[in-house]
Length: 112
Length: 114
Image 1 (spheres, rainbow over the protein chains, first blue to last red):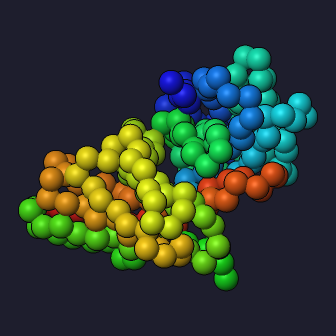
Image 2: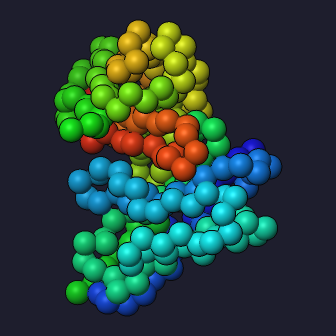
Image 3: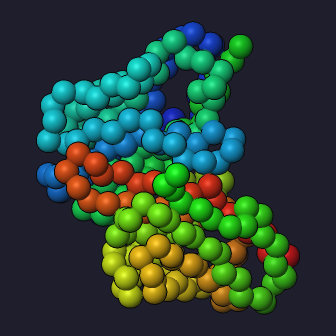
């Protein structure tokens, strides 16, 4: 079965600190995409970052970066210089062909 | 602007009534999806459609029905057979192209059944 596991249900960090959210997944496929989505209190799902599984280089988007370990099936998200607006639910997901599977999410609180 | 619209944002129904949630996209995406979100459960796939006039059950299809008569539209009906219909419902669409794969989401509909 294809699964995504986020082992941290909830986290809190001080503003300006760096935080890492964990994600592991399980699939026998070799061609897939990995994502981190953010869901703020408005509940709109927002794509944070995307990683193609065939690329070894870790994706970065401004303050957001990933640590992609394909052999270990690990895909963690690092948020640098965290801001109050980063407070949200974060979902890890992977996409195979046109089907996407989500983890249960990590609720992140950025404290002033 | 291209995107996905879901209406209404909040919906209230009495138990025993069927209710249809709207989802429209103008992104020219082939695939469309319905998810249900409950606290602590993440997103669970209800139904998805890869092309017009075709759709497949997701993980929790019981008590739901869909249609895909047009590429732009993928309405979801929550029937009276759904035992616990109160939830947040998200519609999404996607296209499978090299380097462009992701799901785009609508703003969601909060359904409350009493």
